[in-house]
Length: 137
Image 1 (cartoon, one colour):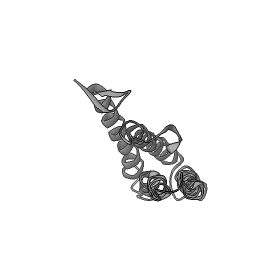
Image 2 (cartoon, rainbow, N blue to C red):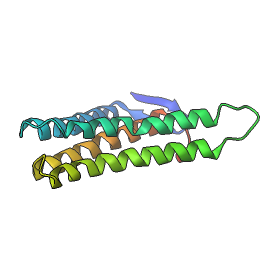
Image 3 (cartoon, rainbow, N blue to C red):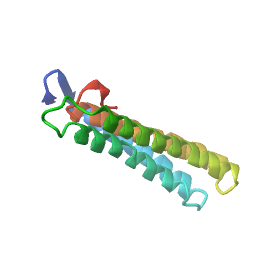
Image 4 (spheres, rainbow, N blue to C red):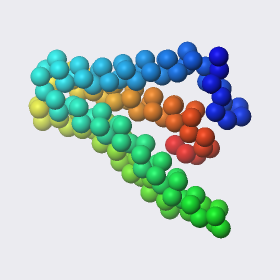
């Protein structure tokens, strides 16, 4: 049974289940990177990757609020800048923590992989169900 959100976008239940599985695997990697070495600092990586798409969503809606203009590019550019800053923080924070020997190198790579899976899942899900155009990411 396909899920249809907009014309041309059909997502089946196995695809939704796959997205849920990938999201769970990402969170599992981040939590394991914390729990295996009894150091909960890599959990901040999951927080940054969860918050990363929020500026894009807020700024894209703010740019389209005026009915008389075609859209303000400054809002969209600012949202992309803040999202890029959060994604860069999510990728570099475990490397910084591993370099300063606050976490183990294996925990660093597990949290980066888990955070990438979480952020990728959020992007795919918002791409299918967001209803926006291709320039939204």
